Image (cartoon, rainbow, N blue to C red):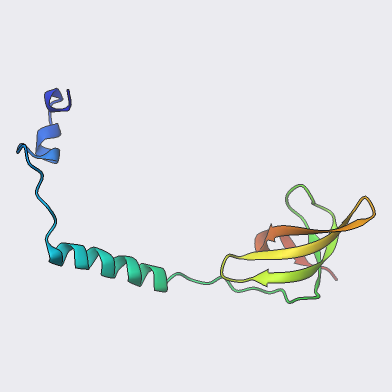
Length: 101
């Protein structure tokens, strides 16, 4: 069925046996993936443990809480929020909170 679609043979190839990648091509792919992994930017976190923050986005918008953990690599903060009179930890993106005055 695929071979019957016009223009597909030039993309897939018209041989019955696929051509394997050479060792050099495989090494190049692995090197590129490793260099991309190591060059990922780490977001700058402007929060520290114990900071009071105001949540302005998401289901807990307009709540205030205290930063319990900071995960700079993933851009997340764990905030202790009072919900129905109980302190509850909530994982939020750093873009969802701002420092309270």
